[in-house]
Image (cartoon, one colour):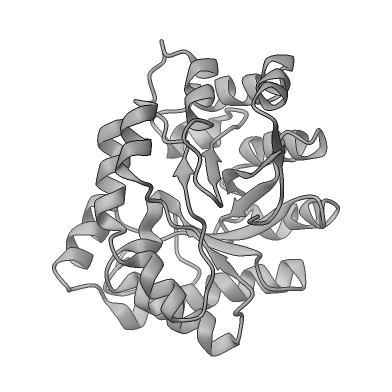
Amino acid sequence: MRQVVLCADDFAVTEGVSRAILDLARAGRLSATSAMTSRPWWPRLAPALRECDGRLGVGLHLNLTLGAPLGAMPRLAPNGALPSLSTVMRTALLGRSPRGEIREEIERQLAAFEAAMGRPPDFVDGHQHVHVLPGIRAELLAALGSRGWRGVWLRDPSDRLRAILKRRVAVRKALTVRALATGFAQAARAAGFSVNEGFSGFNPFDPAGDVAAEFARAFDALGPRPVVMCHPGHVDAELAALDPVVASREREYAYLASEAFGELLRSRRVALVPRLP
């Protein structure tokens, strides 16, 4: 059997997304989720995740681009609202990120995870993959290292070029993230952290797309320690106000809950596991 971590991102972004993730986790159709501890839903919904401990890996979904930070960030979020991904990327690539502010916010989000779960996260990734950006990655590694949390693994959102091209799903997005993540895995390992080897699940957000075919391709060309990302959810007014692309979440939820997905796992001889193989 191939062991795969199937991770639903964005737990706690809204109640609807979180409820969908919990339903799939209880049905054994997910093996991990990453939580946005900066969102108001987190303290209320985290206890439900503790019921799945041992069967579901739970990580921190570092958030620097959606909603409000947990504390003051006068340079990055001067009006109390986190900036767009393009702004965070531009400042990071130019070496102008307010690294002190970012380190403090990383610490706050880690502390919020520990306060609600009573333990460190199993892993850390980033909303829109911000955790791999230059400067931000260094502050994340330093924050985790200062806490002595060496058992936390980190998500490398890059993959082998051949695997990305073979899947033929959201290729441009996958290649862009691969470029941004250059050197991330090496830096994480040098700091004493484990990383996945193989990553897929990029969504083309095509309302006319074939979700079953997209998931089948996500399970193609898996690496030796693979993570597959997904974004299921129930759409509510709060989500629609936050995210301009929401239809794909309901479609992903319906497919993951279906017998067709179960058959995909059986035919590929895949076992969903909460931690890296």
